[in-house]
Image (cartoon, rainbow over all chains, first blue to last red; front, top):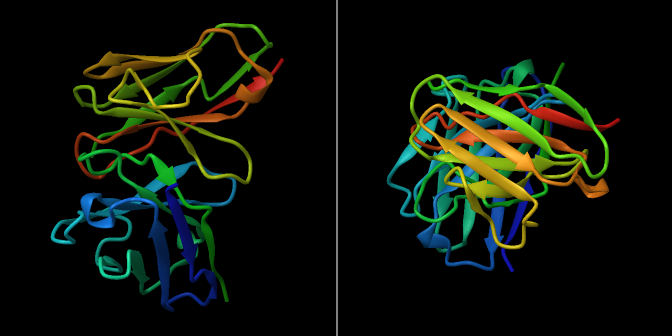
Length: 120
Length: 107
């Protein structure tokens, strides 16, 4: 059974940093790209970033480029999102999601999400 | 960036109705489109990939069609469990954008 478990969310001041983690199990971790998708309170889904199975390819939404860094540790089956220079508009539930098949960007399995609140 | 526009934003329907949600892309995405269902407080659920392929375990009353820039999600006979918000997403090219969502409500 595929499982994705996010952690690391919390309250942070504007301009601060936070590192999210997503522990994965139930599939061959290195074979799949992984995404971060967020959802602001009461709003729709917002794709944030994706990383290839090897970690060699990464893409970001324009809204987070230069501030967020996606990475993965294939030895630990864990995905990360380093978030720097946080803004109020980054407040959201952050989901990690496994890509479907070989195509980056799609998401067939999702974690339960972790809430990030950026506020003073 | 590829913009995804869903219509309608809200849809009121009754159990047993046939409903269709439309998703339009601002440029061709071939068939690289997925549909998701989300219920309040829950993570999205993957329903359809490559525009028309049903994910394993998803009821056959759900179907998808389209290619290029226009796509539809159809639910042939609404069940009580289907009242939720639905999102389309293009995964043809990054950034992998979502539509704004369609809330399916009980009439």
